[in-house]
Amino acid sequence: MVIVLKRTIEVRGFHVIGEVGFAQSRAELRAVAQLAASRAGQLSARELCEHLLGSKPDAVGLRLLSVCEQMGLIAWDLKPRGGESLARLTEEGRRVAEGGDVFVPERGAWTVWVAKDPLIPLEASLLRIDPFQEPTAFDEIGRRDAPRQKRATVDLPDWVQRVCKSQGRPGWGDGRAVAMLDIEAKGEPVVESKAQVELSLCAAPHQASSLRLEGTVDGQNSELELPHAPAPGFEEVWRYCLGTRAHDWDGERLAVRFEGLDGAELSNFKSHIAFDHWLHPQHGAFGRVQVPHVPIRPATDIDASRWANWLLDHRVQSYVTKADFTRRCEEVQETFAGYRLQLMTQEQLAVSLLGASGGRPGRKYWHLQAPLDWSL
View 1 (cartoon, helix red, strand yellow):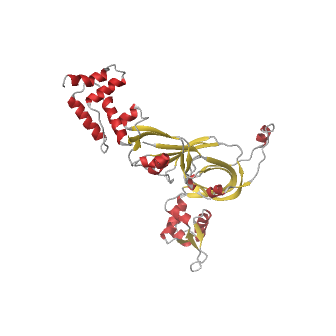
View 2 (cartoon, helix red, strand yellow):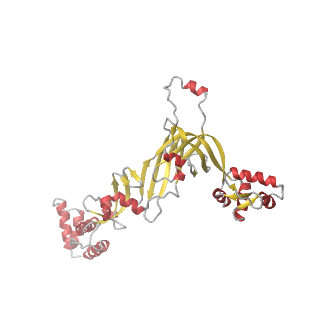
View 3 (cartoon, helix red, strand yellow):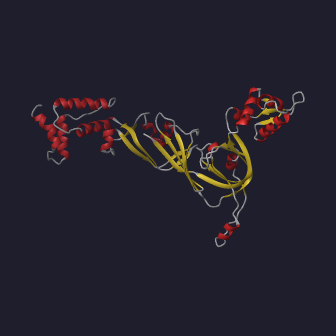
């Protein structure tokens, strides 16, 4: 039993200006951060030269610390120790010291594609980022006969601004982690919609739920798992599927009425159930849901009795002796343990088959009646 919810998410594109950091290994800068971390988060140029640079002049250490400052790994202490300036490790520097990549800043114009959905965490909302290039004169000439669209700069929506202050690994692009370091609060909307992305929520019993994005962003197809997203668990997803029927679920099986069940459902004790929609106050809405292989049980004693008698009928494939019929009754009683069953006798079942066939004895009828006639 697996529940899969799907919906198309909102994706917006903007041309923006600002500083973006792209992840690089930069082992030499990580070594500086690790040295500072080992010295209580503080480091002087002289100490750097003594431990990492082979006792080169302090000016070399200052230049390297200046590079670290540009990358946001250190900040200069306003109260130097004994007249010697000290570099203090920042939170970003501590992250790099623990093995993280360095975000190398680049300033320019960018096209960003961002997602808005209550189930997508901030760090996964930046779907794609590319350098933005203004249309060339050739492009403008090619568009001369096309209707001209007015370009306008707007204030970025608050949710877009939050994404533009985050770190993440865009699922559409070259796979590098990105840090949005300093993006201006205004941008130019991408006029033509070039994104179609679907969110899937998969929930199954006794497993962690998973979230997945799949679709096209600016002409590129991709798929992205969201392993750290706070996806609702199976019991919550299933409870909101059932709605007012939630009380029919006992944690393992769903109570159903005998009417409306087909032969496969009665034989396998599983049903395919459809729901028109799924709505949650925090996680939003999904459309029609098909849930296959739902374990089912009788809702009442009457439903259980009709189900049990159907099984006795359905399992008649050859001649049934009294001992065989007794054993089969015991089996269905065990199957429906906890219900008060009213089972037909072998003779009653044979008569019901005769009535169902319009009084014309069929093969099943003789499989039941003949052993009774012969006292088998």
